[in-house]
Length: 482
Image 1: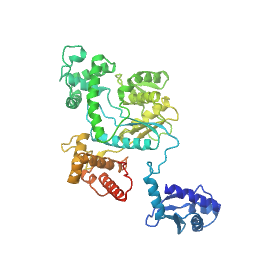
Image 2: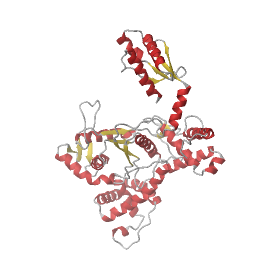
Image 3: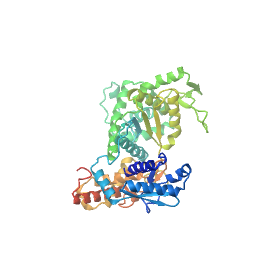
Image 4: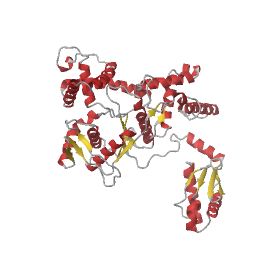
């Protein structure tokens, strides 16, 4: 707010002097020990005004001083213009912000409808540490965009279709009597989350060595995708069991989605879409597979064709992602679609976006963005694992940092709020993720994250409690509205 005010008022001073105003820009100071804000426009104006930068800066400082008293303007050689705001002005600003629910942040004048695709968990598999960054970054982007006034729809985009589901069902057939789903006399099997978590890795490993089992899983996948009643009903039950657990994990992180769609949601769009690509001359056969060229003349490195359908006729991620874009454009009509996905998927999204534009799945002005991020590593610099060396489940990670936070809290805090360790732990977890450079890998250090000093989520919460205590003693309104 203050920087905007300084910009407007300094432009007014420049205009009064007959100076061009388009180059007048106030920024935060590079030397906070000297001043709070600065303007380097005198250097840019020197040639145009045929005068020394220091004389231009001094003229601006004098004119500003005659007009305004809320800040002092001083000049430093060879032409820096520095501003220091008075304590009275800061106090007035704080009082204004205290009564402003938006804290001085204006809503956008050009709101967009934005779909944010983040999360991406797979059915029948527990959330693990690899799902953390997508959830945390995606949720932060969604909340910020909503606060700015955009119409935002968050979609978890489940991995609920394809070969993995055939593997799960093939594995369940060997563990349970599934005749209930196919008109038999057997009772409905009591399949649990634990069963699903055990079956998938076993079935996946077995399919790599057992050709008969792999062929069986592929046949089940084919039948499921044709919506054969028994397999489709069983699939629905599997999804319901898995989604209930996924929602619990996300709820522990205070992450919420508006849509719980998945790859299955766009299944009906895939074949007609690909057929259209063929008919319009975009797609062609190569080594039995159906592909499309997406390379452009301006490419500085090779861009491989996008594969739309495998040689065995199976769908792949690219075709379902394209069909999802088509489904979203027809049902939601977004201005922008953001994908918060691991940086290693950069080539995939570049191919998908190019294909979507080339085939006119999106309007020319529709924005498609891949928001990449790095991996979460342990203190050894390698991808974060359990002590046994396996991929850590997200619920175990939350429990781990909640326990560490609990050890840092006083007994009084624990007695007042039994959920305090989780709240502090998740604040530490999310802050530790967001404070890092998004595109870089970062070290997950639990001991560092839960400390009540330094740049940590725990310290932010501690500071908030202290501020609220001071405000309460001063008789000011509660910042949290409680």
